[in-house]
Image (tube, rainbow, N blue to C red; front, side, top):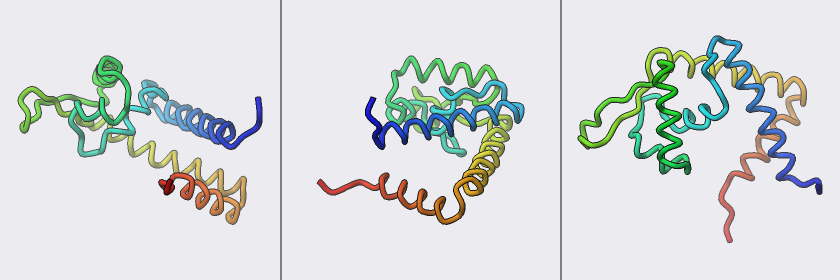
Length: 140
């Protein structure tokens, strides 16, 4: 396989995700998985409409439903009627879910500190700037 930027970005992303998931489980969130993290990243702390999750995640309605069912069974989220749409549901964090988000914020900062220590401040800041540049939409 040729060595290219996409491969290296994928490897770095996978390493970060695995480190984060392991730290979340070590912090007492045994229910946490990378699949569930992919969905949680689309749910703001104030909650969101369930239908919007399907659009934002790009996965099937059934997959979103299954992930939400599991998170609800674990006590991480709850679903409530949407007052603006009687057919719709709101997805809201429970106190357990909010505590997990707080732990996640702390863990992300811990990982970032280790990256800074490993790379050095200048290299880390250059990496952050480069990643920001790559994430910006480019004119065609």
